[in-house]
Image (spheres, rainbow, N blue to C red):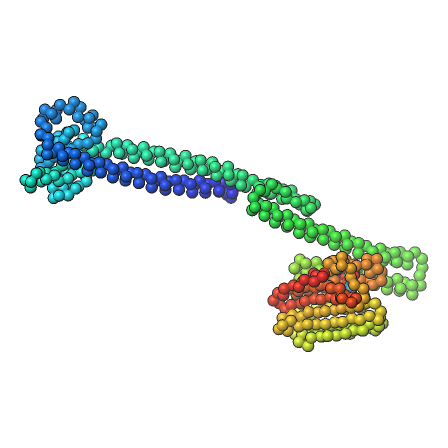
Length: 481
Ligand code: ADP
């Protein structure tokens, strides 16, 4: 079973408090007990001085005197001191002033004390524990050693110890209970924002991604959590919107050629046509189908690349050779438009680990666009720059004269179906609107970046970095993908 955070917090806190309290209480109990016993021993030793003083002065108590104490047991209990003067051999000489003539004595302790020592012993008297001290008492110059035994009942001390134990046990129990209660309440208020955040986050789903979590979180940590979740929602929202836009764009882009196709075929079927006319209709239909095929292939590659379903199949590739090949295929259109092409290819860029098929598609799109968007008689420059060392990657630069791209369009030109001039592009150039999105996707598949910059004079420059397998840090550009 998974424990709730609140319960875990409360139990752990209470357990820690209980352990702490138990430790402190044990130390307090042992310390106090030690102190009390020490006090008792000192008091007993002090009593010996009094008694010893009286050894010199008092006459020995008579049996009658001893018997004259009305209730010796009770009296002794109240004062809790007993004293007996004994010869070194153990013979009772005198008992003071609260006498118990049958006060037991420990003969070995007596013997040790007679050798001028002080001996502490715990004994039993009438089945009750007593604490005794044996101290040698010299009798005025005779050289004969006597021993004074001073005793006290241990019961009052044991009672105090028991009371102290009970009080401390109660402190530990009540303290632990109070900590558990306090920690439970505190834990409740600490995790409440989590419940609120969870509750609000649960209600946000695909259709309501524009909502944000506004749970009342008054601590830095929860504010941080809410901020992170909201940022994640923002990214999800943006991704969903892009997805929706893409779906809408795809449907639109598909519908237009399909409608045209249908119209042409319907017109052709309306009345009898010559074989030549049928051929023209079929050729036109084939063109539309080719465009649709290209579009769906490009779209498939872009979406697969986004979902990391495809990867670059890298082999040692000569990027300069790929550029020249693509240029050769465009030669006729270049000549038709009277364009000048300048080349500045880095001789070091001859063998880079790239996917040749994907790199060719990338170059074809960039060069095709350059030819398409450069006004007649304009100029195109193509460059390659090898990384250092040369095998680490290559940077393609393709620039063309003409009109610059408006600043507000720059960040979007790599988005699928984004056209700077929607009205013009499709009709005139027949582009699918996916070319630059495909360029960006291929660059990303190589771990690289594609960007566009407006040139100082006129026209635009597209730059693509294709690093070899180790990642390359992307550079910031005006419009980058
Ligand atoms: P399209 O099929 O419309 O050419 P692209 O994705 O290739 O789609 O390009 C997106 C838009 O970026 C184009 O509609 C065009 O406005 C602009 N663009 C692309 N290449 C160039 C270029 N070399 N010079 C100027 N504008 C360009």
